[in-house]
Image (cartoon, rainbow, N blue to C red; front, side, top):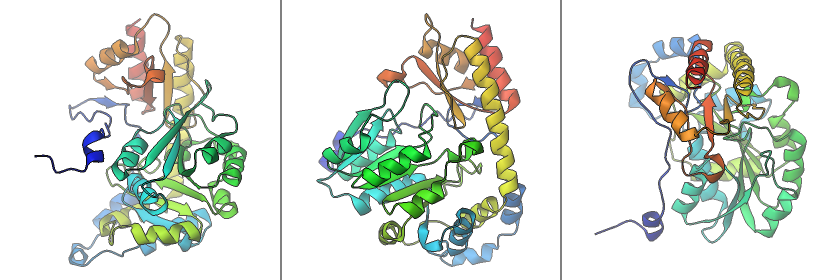
Length: 356
């Protein structure tokens, strides 16, 4: 006998990137930072008092919350700490969307959005990005006409890595009648010269909720820590729907150590940007079509006459994992490649050259 709700029985689960534990494997498929966390994280871990684990952790992660607020020049009331970015996505749906209301996305995008909508029994409306991975014209009108209560927009975009400008986001927030959740999981890798100002979006718009994560920029994907930035009118109701103690004491301590070591973090981001430019240029020279990325990955369209799936399998056989989206129509001729260390990236480029 099946006991699950009808909508759960009908839905499909999220499919994460392959996690293969084979020694020597080069993982360029799940957008992890190739560099270790700050040494400050090691020191913080060594200094953890295990005796405190008998007590519940601070329910709002107040010390970390304050450090995040200081980093962004906002108030603590503008910050909510979550157990990974996915928890914030769940909370946003539970807090702002009725089961008979609609969420909207621009496709292709993070497939978990659809999974969460299905799990909560909400409607999902999608609009196709154009050939340059830009939002459709009059996107705000499309959202409002669809009656969307919440829209998820990953920026920089996944899987292309392209960035929607600050001005475009600001205009969209002005015109959209619902909550605009900006999934900025990869924002740390954006070229600083582009002056994309997340904090200003929060100050200027009471309907903008920003997701930030420690997984990518701070090399803490294994810790499952993230946070949201928004006006008090958004953060306050989210505090009602979060778990009582949604993040543990050790994770709070290590995340705080990492965000306070901005010099180390910025150095890793700069290294990724430098390698991103090198790998992009090399792939283009080899006939791949690669849009300009502002993330820690690139999306490469394989040259005509080659199969993306075959190339993915050939790389896998050589111990190099990249992401192939088999069931995504617009991505069937493409590979998403995480930027690794210079040595890892060279192994990738050499392997691609060897395949002809």
